[in-house]
Image (cartoon, rainbow over all chains, first blue to last red; front, side):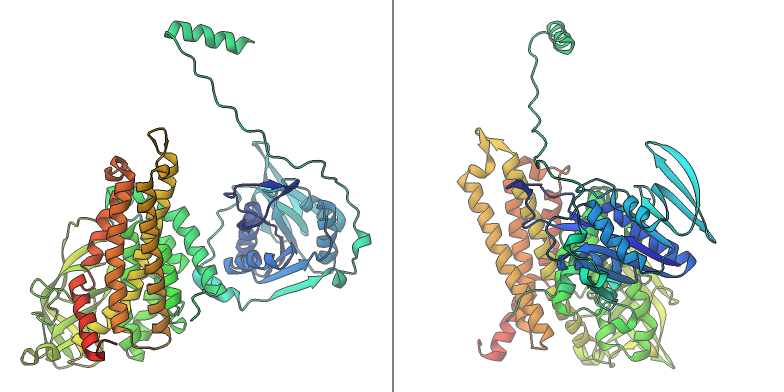
Length: 251
Length: 383
């Protein structure tokens, strides 16, 4: 079974976000594999170990993203592919989906996995858009995946409830938290990762150029959520305090 | 001289850092209270490959050089020292003897299982009458046919309880003093091997030291490690090899203590302002920082020299001595900066303070390190 995982390099969730000149300041920040994509990578490895085949992890980015691809290889993926976004400055979800689907349309795939959302932008659009472009089935927010021949049974999270869906391969599935418990890249895995293939391709290789990209979204403003105001202390005797509180709550 | 770590080592360190932070630190208090490292943490550490860092790749380990090992030890030093000791004693003195002195058959038999952590290693030299005076061993090994029969006891043996494979020093020829000692690879299943009482220590909770008793214990001749009569020299070599690693572990603990201090001095307010605003506190922090940086330079220099196959007897002893002295001073300053909180068991600072103390004693006391340094000075005419 040929499994592809779509991976995004994101801000470390523990980083302090700083907005500078209408942009999130990335200088000096730590980056990680988008945690939802980690579930996707883990699932791909588990499915490969059960059904055989190969796991290829694909990302769109610059050479910095090689680190996260190496991490995926250290976890146990077989191949990494970095599609260099090069000079294209602004690339929205539609653009990323175009690049990924163009790449994937030339590959033989049975299963495509990715995170439900990325923890930075949080749009959750790239996976579904790729499936649409490829014309294959898509199931989002999976919490369990069972593959039997070409039949796939997926349990999915529907806003706190659960639903079971059956589809046939090929399918694109997005991973929800709880799908699995991603492994740590083992130390021997890290040593082996450097010997695994990591292919770098550019937009030229995909016959894409700048004109093919049309922004479907526009950033109007980038700002941090307002700071929480400090609470108000209510003084006085308990009975008095209760009165003040009730008055404040009534407004 | 280039002190930068390779990308690969940085990658490994990042992996260890994440593991320590997510899997070990959250249970540090539990380890301290229960005096046990949770089985799940040991299992996950094995899966991660931590037990194989000093074992060559062809035997299933990572085959890291000394700089690489030190970088990982530094990360491991940043958490509960009992946990650090379990891994450190195994990957250091518990397995280095077999790696450095073992025959091909011995390596094939022991190292793959030690690399995965299935078999944990320990080093058994110390006896009630032989501490710093290591040549004064009483454990006897007498050759009978294709076996040696060992009688005697060891104490304060780190990893004794978890250990499966022991590097044991015993006297094969009592007429020859230090030259009559031989090292053996002993398995805990050998007939006549008995684990004694677990010792209660000031710190390093979760890492268990115990006595070992050998009563007519049979050790096959093929388990002699190195040459007969070379046991004392072997022991010194194994201990010397571990010194840079110990310094790196102490370095990690100092770095962690400084982190705790930096968090605390901005959070804690006295006299209407954060503690950091007090110059006395700033000076303590500066002193910690100076000691950390000097220890870091020293540690990685010795590690680098070791990898260049240079003689590092004096430098390694300096690093071991300095690393443990610095760790104790930094732990003391950290307690002082934290004040009452530093003394309380609800916070990790006092734990580091207790754990630091053993580093001036084990694997060669500070006094023995000074002897080694002076001996090397005499040998080299002070160069």
